[in-house]
Length: 130
Image 1 (tube, one colour):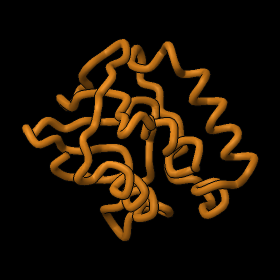
Image 2 (tube, rainbow, N blue to C red):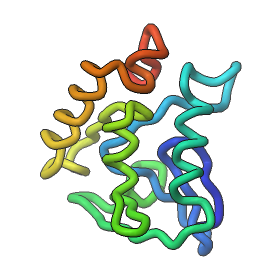
Image 3 (cartoon, rainbow, N blue to C red):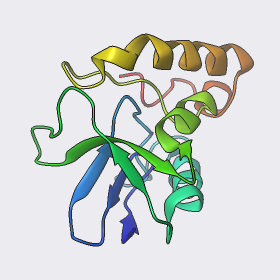
Image 4 (spheres, helix red, strand yellow):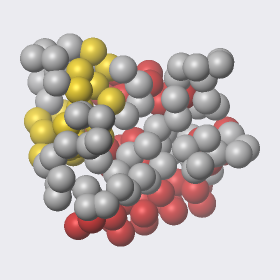
């Protein structure tokens, strides 16, 4: 892993940008960043920085910005699901990418929302629910 850009995007050692499928974390940049953006970035960095990651692809392998779209795992733990279930990201489905697991991620988000984890307890409005 070369660099963690934010809560849902990393750059691999070969220079490829990887955008996590079905996870949309608040931004940490811009005019002060979004509510919970720095926390989402730190959580992602703590999971993947300096670690060997495994990528699994969904129905589409690239987005309109040329980034790889993937489920990212470290030591058998999928980062995408951890981000959503812990409230560090909302579900973002851009068809067709992630279609087969969309309901699973929506259920994780609903549980995080009910428990007021992460963005669901810290932010009003929730920045990734645009």
